[in-house]
View (cartoon, rainbow, N blue to C red):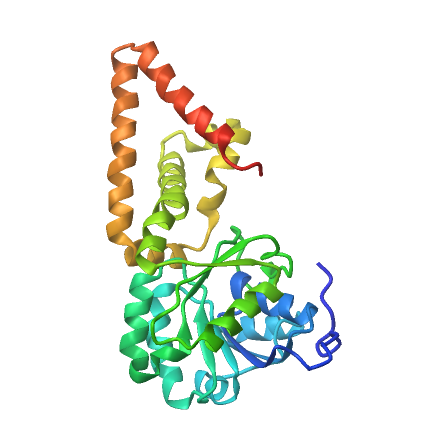
Length: 301
């Protein structure tokens, strides 16, 4: 994708929505948001925060950020801070940011789980929790790093916000406007309800794909299997190529809801195994028919 040179974006008559944006984790998620906001003319200066100096320099070369910064430097300058790191480290990062936050600054995250993230944020931010508006963009890819950034990633995608009682309406509105400027449709949801639903439609598919891919790859004849694998295998296992660190944190952060989904899927697999073992074609066909009907009735891709 062609990226505009830093500082050449067209801004609105009243200036950008976000004068200074800090992105913690300038990979696919954070980098795509920064790039989309740049192209929309809704951000002035972008600071990148991360553990890897080479990745931050690459992000600067690609025009995703203007400069790298420490957490302390970013907090002291930013009007909005987007945390796009694995959920397991969000609490520690918020604790680093808190002493240096500007009073008007708003923080938000892009984590795939919300209840545990909110708990970690409360512990880290204490009386400043009202400055944190939890969020989750339903978008992604198996790619990672600054080179994966795509300004179109969030277009026509859904972003879920799980506002807190302490959030001022203006703070929620600013985060909502951020994602809308990226082209997303934004909805509000309860954090616990979010985690239950996402365990089913996001976390469980990834766990199944990863488990199946690991099983195939560890077989004695793995090379022969992979040589003959076709489009079905490719489509089913595509998401298994995602970031192990990110998905480890997601699974552990949402363990209760994910275990409930595992039990439910295991029960259906047991039904299928029983039908196959007993040669019960009618039961097997009924299961497959229910699945086919449900999939065909789902939204068109």
